[in-house]
Length: 296
Image: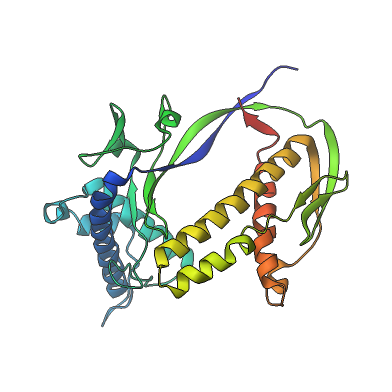
């Protein structure tokens, strides 16, 4: 059968090397200022003291922020326009005249976020250039020859920065060898298929629960966050390997109807959350929606 080629967009998440963190932290503060200005201005326009209110669009916010780059040291006009566009999208999504403020300091500080347009991110030797700053990332070879779209730099709870960039890739059609399979969810075995395959519970959080508690008692918040991230990564990797195998082998996948939200309110909450049923269902659904296409 002839190979049918199709293109899709895949988001790469590449870790930024540590020497770029101070610059990104400072740029994130300026992004928060633009977001908060758009938030305050849009709220005043939607709820004026007199007259009819108006919901400002991204184009309206761009006109109001024209020339603001002379007051910023790190971000440019393209980044400001991306912040305005994202704010307009989220305000329409949640149907609110005012969204949450982005906080730059304190215990309730918002995680760093710097959106960019595709033209802003460019190759420069062994690094990437963004707004006049050269940034290095791990696994840079994944971007070689790739055509990317608008993305962002995002900060996680530990404080590390990641480059999230959508890239186009080719897919080739394939048909799974087996017709259908049923999956039963549990706690001793996270998932068991009707053909006998099992994914045993990894106890990703349970195995390091005492270390997390010890770090929290000592006040080592950063260490506790790193341990939580280690558990999340192990869980995600195990579920990814299992779901990838199932999607590759079967054309139809049926999963047992188990409510993890209800069970999370019982005494089995820790075991239920550690199993990651919701993540497994999401991965199977996402990978199954690719119409039996895999990377070429």
